[in-house]
Amino acid sequence: MALTKENIINEVYETSQLPKNRSREVVETALELMKGTLATGDDLLISGFGKFMVKDKKARRGRNPQTRADLQLRARRVVVFKTSGVLRRRINEAAGLESD
Image (cartoon, rainbow, N blue to C red; front, top):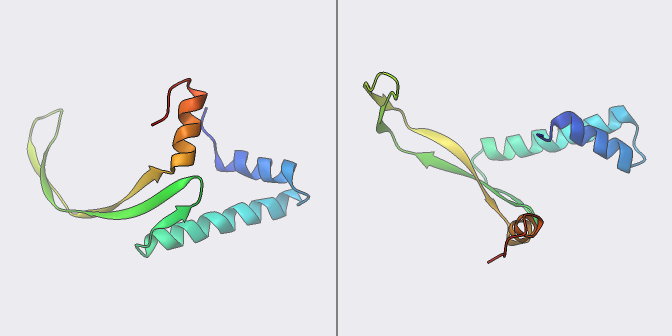
């Protein structure tokens, strides 16, 4: 099951003393701050969670997998996420795997 924005708002509401509408404002503000940071090309580091980085991808040749026709993919910016060591260990421990 995916964690949705509504799930996050409900969790903030249930674990804090904030009213539901204020919980929504807090979550929306945090997400807008994150989106604004990434839109400017800056990295977003959340300690214990990970780092979101904006990377530039060059234009390249591609292929339509259905028609096998060649096409040109344009240059673009993408967001890449790298987990922190803390989160990586927690995920692996929850799965019963050894962490590195």
